[in-house]
Amino acid sequence: MDRRFTALRVIGTIFKVLAWISLILGLLGAIGALVMAFTLSDPERLLGLNLGGPLAGIAVFVVALIIAVFSFLCLYAIGESVYLILSVEENTRRAVYIAQQQYTSYQAQYPSPAPPPIYED
Image 1 (cartoon, rainbow, N blue to C red):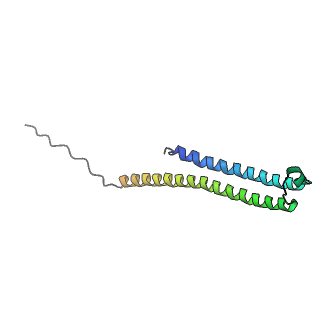
Image 2: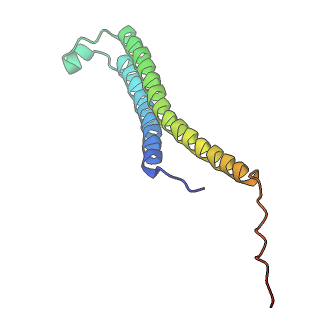
Image 3: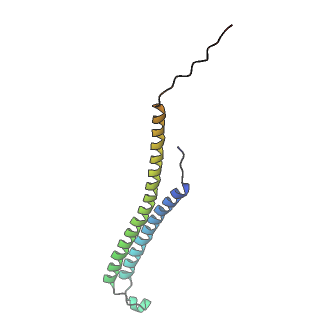
């Protein structure tokens, strides 16, 4: 059977790729926040901000990690649900095709009509 709905397959794949990208960027951002919290000796003097020190860096790391994992799960679930809908469509089409084949094979076979009699004079 032919594969249909190519655009939906592409959309599902795009969502899966976006999920992995968001997870990687979220992890990098969380690790970056943690590294900045511990490496900056005086962030208020350097950046002009009062960031709160290492404890705030750990809190930002945990929150960013949770957000990254949650966004990954949401985007990946969207991609998988697109594939789920496509799979349901394919299986339904296949089931209809099989049912039609079984229906036509169980049809009563009518005998072919007898040829008309030939009258010779």
